[in-house]
Length: 478
Image (cartoon, rainbow, N blue to C red; front, side, top):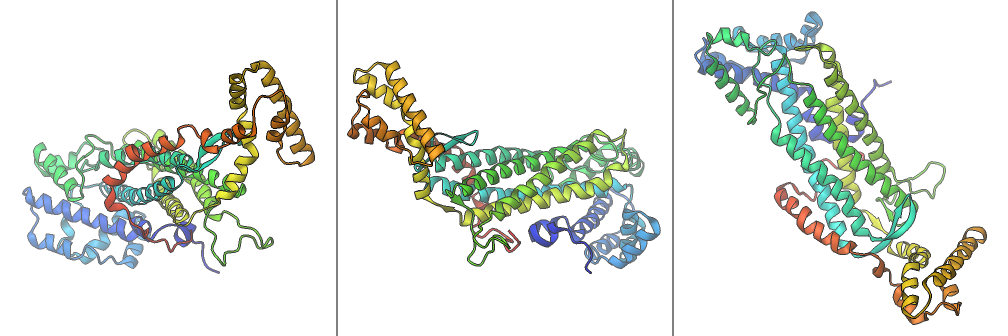
């Protein structure tokens, strides 16, 4: 029997996000940190030869995993295992690898790099979701549909106005994602407890050299900002902020998945269902919304993981304690992998989402008679009727109609009742004008178009280079 495999690897996440949190990228980044650290230290006058620098560069990618495993069993320390394995390859450079550094130099800087690169992967997928929903919204911006409050029929909105609400949630998430990317900080070279004592010794107390080293190293990895102060590690609140962002994206996704499943039950809208897809092993007719259900399932998981990072941030001791380590190995990568899968599913749904306008129209016809009562009262008063008397007549007809519908399964005959009531001064021609659904959508269409024009399109124009009709790695199980 095969050993356990994480479903995020086997079924859900994209190849690019899996690579981003892979051992290969993580430990290659460690080696790059060692290499650039030595290169800049040499530039600043430390006794490091050009031959040693070339030796490090030459062996950046040839990781002997068996040797690493041997050393880790021996030392019970992952950094020392990789340090020795690297030294076995780069024998000339071995004496100067990790000079002045600590484990957090590798771990924290690498984690920040992976988080930043993971956010960039999510940014692309998020933009494509917004792009697809934008197109859907424009197509259906003027199609009336029943709005619901408390999942009870309310007034009318439009199909596009409702989907614009999904975009609005995502724009809030995007704003936060952009903020996090813009303000993400490199940990830099801070030494064992954040005091840079080892580097003070190496550079004979020259603080400017240490600042130069830190700034140049951060630039090598594409960072403009460096944490001005740390303990041994960067503040774990940063992880909590990032996972809160992923939780927020998941909350938006879950809300959409709820809405879609409710609408699919009403037969108004449906996620794609392939020709040979099976909805149920027992009920052959079923068209279960497995994509949106999977979104919801993964979203719950991401939301729950954000609590874990909050606990880690809250319970660190003084300059650092290691009870964050195992937790962070799990929750950071898995939160990104899950959010990645969620956005892939969302993109997939909107590639071939199905709308049933006739069903939407029928549902409006069933409920619209009750929605026009205020208009009827106004129209009758215009024709000289007493407002309170008309209100009472309409109330009586409403109750009787409701009773017939619910107790006897009859169709809604409210309009016929009103037209036949001689005490209500309204004719069939006027009634038919009142019953036009577009009279009841308010400014839904106008609001939607303005929202798309002023808020959504500028964002899509800004990130137009990320819009791709073929979402990467959509071969995963969406």
